[in-house]
Structures are given as C-alpha cells and as structure tokens.
Length: 188
Length: 442
Image (cartoon, rainbow over all chains, first blue to last red; front, side, top):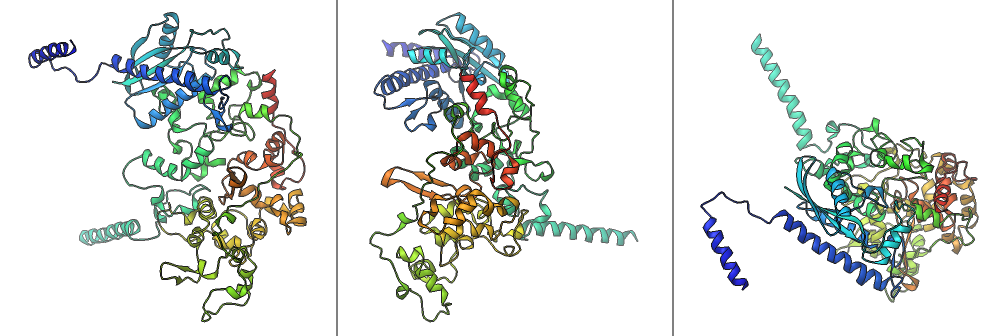
C-alpha cells in the first residue's frame, strides 16, 4: 500500500518537475517544528516519569530533584531545568533551530514571554487547549518561523512545585493544565 | 630643489615604514603596538600579543575563544550565572542590542585602563538593570535601591553566586560568627604521589656527582625535607631525559612531573601565568618590580617560580604558607597579618604538626580542594592565588565557611577596613541579604 503511494507521489513529482516553478527544497517548517516538539515532549515526559518520579523522593529516594541541584550530592535537575539544559546544549551545537520553555506565570521572570509572537502564542495555547500556534517574526536582522506548543502538567510534582513556590504568580494549577509553552524557532 | 625634498620624503617614509614592519614582524618587543595599558589581570602577558590576538583575521569570536581558553574552566566551576549560551537564543536579540553579553569583551574591554574598574569591568555599574529592572519594582526589599548597587559586595555577582543565592542564604542563616567545629582539610595530594615501596633517604643516600661544587648546606636541607622522607633523591629532580642529563636549576616543568596539579594551578594565577603553556611566547617569570602592587625592598628582585616560595631543597611548606608571601608583599593587608587573630594563632602554633589547621596567607589565597571521601579523598592546594578572589565572595564557601558562619563571612568580606587590617575585629558593615531572604520565607 505504502509503496503504491510512494509511486504515485514519485510520478506526480516527475510530472511537475520542469513544467512549473522551481520549488524550494526542504521540509515544511511546521512539520519540522512539530517533529522536534514530539521528541522534546517525549523526552521531557520520560525524564519526569521514568527518572524523577521513579528515583526521586516519592520513588526509591536515590536522587533529589531540586532547583540548586549542583549543590546537592545526589541532586538532579528538575524536569524544567533538564529541558532548559537541553535547549542550551543545542544552542552550543547549532543555530538551525532554537527552543525555550516559557510561561505567562513564570517562577523566574526571565522565562516570561518577551516578543509579541511569544505573548500571542502563549495566550493562544492557554485559551485553546490541545492546539498549537504558528507564526513568523523578525528578531534582530533575522526572520523566524515560530511555533508555540502547550506545556501541560503531567505529574503531581509539576503542579505542587509551581503552586507552592514563593515566586509563583499562580497557585491553582491542576494536572492537565497548560502551565506554559515550548517556543521553537527556525530561521527563514 | 623639489627633487631633493621628494628624496627626503621618500627616505623618511621608508624609514618609518621599515621601523613599523620590523617591530611587527622581527622584533621581540612590540610595545609600539600596545594601544593602551592592559588590566591588572593581563598586564603580565601584554607583550605576548598572540596569546589573545591569535589571528589577525576574525573579530570578537577570535577574542572570545582566547578568553575561554583560559577562563572557561573557572566559569564552569563557578556555576556561571550568565554563560554565553543564555544569550544565544534569538528571543534575547533586543537585549543583545543593549548589552552583548555573548562576548566577554563587551563588559571587560582590554587596553582601556582609564575606564577599567573593579573586576576588570569597563561598563557603567548599572548593567544589571538592563535585563532585571522588574526586580526593583516588584520585590519589596529591593524597591528604591540604586541601579548600580546590585553587584555591590555581598549581594550579587554577574558570574559567581554560589554563596549568595537566596536558598543558600536561607539554609545558612543564623549561624554563629565562629562555628563550634572549625575544620580545614589536610592537604595530602603530594603524599599520594609517593611511589609504592619508596624508602626514606638520609644524607648518605644523596645522589649527586662529587665533581659538582655543591654548598654544604644543600644536602642537609634536602635530607631534612619531605622529598628525602618520600624517597625522592637529588637526581629525581636534577636530571631529565633517558640519558639522565643533569640540570643545575630544575624549573617548574620538572616539578610538574610529580606535582602536576600544583604547577597547573600556579600557572593559572598571577604568580605563574607568564610560565603558562597558553602564553604565545616564552616570558621571564614575573617579579615584584613588574607589578603595580606594594612590595618589600628585599623582594624586589625575586622572580616567581616554585622555588621562590618553597625554597629549593628545604621545601618547607609551612614557610611557604606565610613567611614566603610576606617576604615580598608589603601592602596594608599583608603587613597586618601577624597582628591579626589569624596571624597570632599562626605564629604561636605553626611549628607543630597541627599547622594545617591554622590560618595562614595560603589558607585563604590558595584554597584546598577536597575531592572524594574517606581514604580515597585527595586534598589539593590550588596554587592559583587568584582562584577565590575577584570577587572576594568566591572565598566564602571555599574557605571562610570552614570556620565562620555565612552572615559573618559576607559582612567581613564587604568591609574594606576589615580587609585592610586583615580581619582584626568584627565587621563594621552589615549586608542585609540574609535578612531579606528570611523575610520572604515567612
């Protein structure tokens, strides 16, 4: 079945080649960012459930997920910190895409939306659960395809930590709530 | 007439151009091209231009690589609060237009001596405000604070906040000024270098040629040294290569054969940086005469090496920990040491086996780095005298808190009078950071 589809696509592509405008090669930015987000979300959920929940204080108690984890002998990064560490490591490796974790209710104010696109995107995903937000923006001299994906509370620890933190601007999060958004940018 | 003037002009132009070219490409001394005095951190290597200016092509990235080649490890250890990777996200594009924190030189511009202030910063002191202005508006304790007061002593640092972050302040609040149990780890790294089965050596075992005109006191000094106790003979330091060629005056590289970490850290600090492998050309070791600081007359002609402090052959670590420092350093802080509580206690007891428990110059300025646990613990002395200075809050956790409470340490290090008299008395200033952090806990 699949090979039949591929053959049809191949035939169509062959027909179109040479009789129309040259199409830019490469993957659609939306598919690209959707795919990146799928990997990010899977890794983030797995770290939360398979590592932090299983090995943390409510599991075997062999690691201590804590904000200043470097200062604790068995300290481990919180899921959000692990995610940010990944984003920073990626920025060291490539500028082909960047991503960040933001929220309208950030514990650290530096993680509040700052560009107009981020502000609109985070508002949209909070008001439309289950939907993503896509747009284009210019930052500095570069234009970006910007995608914003909902970051949903998947574990009790996410909710309780954010509700109880002394710097939190919101204290009524529940499991399943959109707590923030993942912003992925691809330079155009 | 015109022809002669043209000829004169041509000769002058060739002479001038030739001098510049010779200075650039052939002369060792390139001071003509030094566009301004360097900072206190780099003046020692300012004539080894290629150490930082590794290529005539390329801009800030080239310089950035040079900065990180020497300072990246330090910043990593300091849990740098503002690493470059925080600023490479495009969402910070508007901030970078105001202050490009991706590059060290944005805040630490070299060759701008007139503009350079504490910590080598060349920016106005309100740099925190550009990104963190909301703190001054939202946090009760910070309302009305001057824009340039964030990085004042005892509050925040741009890079190293390990002893100043809020949770740490809360966790260590309420400690007495002097802890009940004051502990300083005993250095043991050198001891761990002793070869298995090595036997202590005596004067009769000294391995040097009778043909050498060796002053009588030298073998005696060696025989009483820790080297002789550890089975290290004359030839172990005084020879090199497969042919064991005798070296009259072994240098720091010879020491590094056994004391690799000590030599590495020595060459990372101001005492030994001219000998660092990262410097682009060989330089004479630094001496007091090269420095802007205050030194004794007798120390003026000394040049830094391992032996300058450790005395060749005797290798007296106790002497190296205070007397050696004060043989050269003659600023108010140094001269006040022996009259301070730390210094008095040192003078009374430093000849005992317990000397490592006392506070000498080296205790604070060459901190001990303990890694591992129990029998496997190795305690190394960091020989980079600048490791926990600049800013001085770096020594709170690495040294002060071995004996003192956090609040006392923060206040003491923020008091310039107390620093000058070498901590002779109680702090005359109080930094409110712990009080403010506790208030927010309620």
